[in-house]
Image (cartoon, rainbow, N blue to C red):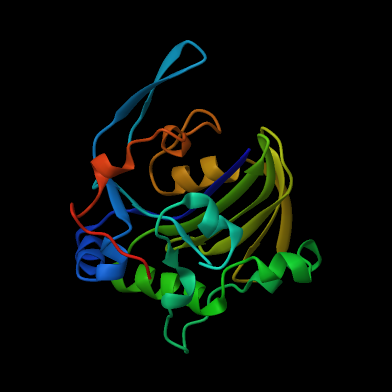
Length: 221
């Protein structure tokens, strides 16, 4: 069994929403969670509450030639199609230093895509994140994130667990080792904290089409 989550997550603002709606490529892959979602976990009732303005999810975003794209069995948004201004520099993957090798770097997002997300965050004054997780047989194989907005940093899981061993780096390029759940970290940053690493939006049966930003829009970029 394989499982991927590879997505842009954002605390939705009116300016961000306007940009996304006016870009056919983004709109075709965008979903907006405005209302709370009740779910059951191990016999207990929980509720996921999105941030004020809603949680915007742009998915799936990856390299269309990678296994990730094949696994989704749906159109993906190519991260090669999104490019920021050359003068905008986001934290590059190699800023994680000794914790990433050539094979790892080859699977991480291109610099131009990360610059695009930083530019989008600046332009719309919004909190954005790019979150990627690959699991095999229920075990995390590869997980990382980028944050933009009030915080700008990158992080990668070194040893998975309920609280994973993580290497993270900010604009100062100082690498820190911490124990944290990256998904919980992302959602807390976006104003939508979750009580455990389980997230109802990451279940295979989640009805994404019910939350599509623009109904009847499809695309493969």
